[in-house]
Image (cartoon, rainbow, N blue to C red; front, side):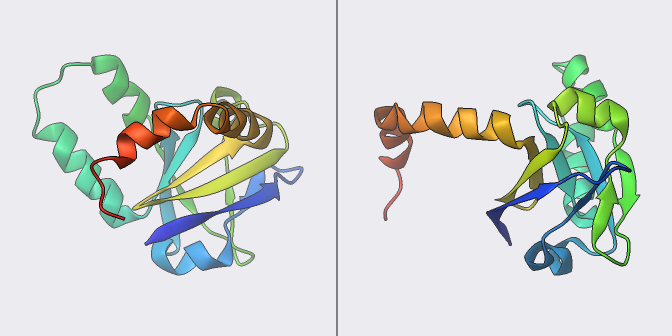
Length: 139
């Protein structure tokens, strides 16, 4: 299970460290793609295969989404646990230097840290919106 949050920085070659706590669940190769929010998603191969099957087995209602997600790149973690983020992906997510990595259960999200912090500030200012989603959960 991928959960947690960590901040790292891109190096001069466009690589970012994947936190050690996530590496075992991801494996040596990952699939990186654009996501719905202005961020990137990083999938271990088994989670990516599951997503591909779901997309293939459903009627295509939004071809733009399929194109965006399917334009994925397979990346290998190097010995230091880093992955290279292609320039077009960095541009899409607005990642210049600081990267926040969020565990989302079966995948990771890579956010520009300033964008992530801005999102969290908005959420903190509107707790009632979150409360609505928690009503169905037994905590």
